[in-house]
Image 1 (cartoon, rainbow over the protein chains, first blue to last red):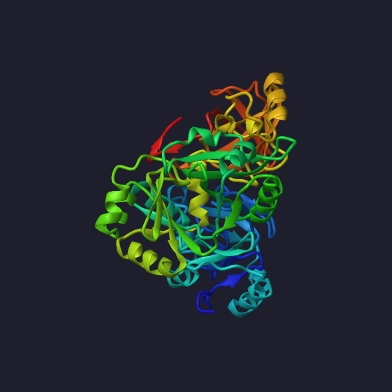
Image 2: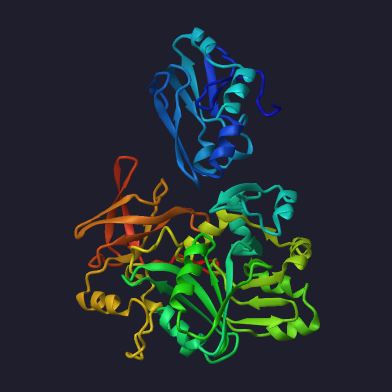
Length: 129
Length: 362
């Protein structure tokens, strides 16, 4: 599928994780996930400095259709959140892999990234949905 | 088996995301339901409502039958084309369906009922018609397009012949007129001006395309739901059903109590409920902070619990609104609480209507 960037890593729960730069990754939800949720109306993000663990529900994407938990795909400390989403949650719809990013995490353990799916693995996982 | 409306191919051509709606494959949106919502509030949008069920009731006893069948009184209808919104009850006073009845003459009426309730509605009407001299005829050979919004009437006007334009010129709200192949009614489900237009199946695609060319935005069921909820209009199956009295569903205004000797189905039950004064009522709820009110959330009030019947994010207002059934003692202006995602959140009680003609009304 063309709308799953190959440079990113993925969780089966539809979060994406960027390549680590200085131990920091960016996290968002996938194009596929935003399509399932429909027009986003609120995004609740964690606080900066929050310590998060893989699998925690750390954010909520609320669309016209439903409220959906977003799970931490990695463990670490939140170092930045996408404040633009406060006024423009629709960025998650229009640019899920870009301006619609959710938060940045300083990784506790960079090797955790190896547990995530690559683009092909994620494409297979959503085919099975 | 899935039904498709005559406009199915047009939806796909416009990039619609299709979903199953009670056995019909219908567009949920064409990209963004919020943009479609705004198109209707600020300009003009159109909905394929061909799945809705059109039923003609004709014959000597048509009037007497409908005066028994529904809670409003069709005897109020004396001007040809005038329409009436009302409900059809079971013997226990529960709402079998809500519907619109168009009056053409005392022997000729057109009913438009919900598609989700088509089979039980037709079965009920047929059963109740025993002993009356009339025919009940479903009219599936039509498409139906709702064109809604402040610019809707002007945009439709560009498609009409001189004769058709003259027929709809100055038509008041809640009227319908058959002119040539088209049945054009000043009804809708959005709280905006506009038409609902019944067209023969063979002409539906062409009519839809001409509306597209005139700049009318195609809108899906998603926008239809947020628009009707802002307008405080009930959705059958959520805001009322066969277990709910019209008194508990903001439909008391559609009950004609006079004349007192009109024996409509459910009258005894409604009269007892009215005397007892113990039916819950449907109100509006407004949440100004973050979050979206949803169907079935519990409403906590000092008079007991209630329930949200439908809730959504209101694109026009920028926050969430809902319809909720609560104890009758709850008043407009009260602050009550809703259980949302394991937290109690404060909401304000309003009349069950939020937006009309693009403007906030509470």
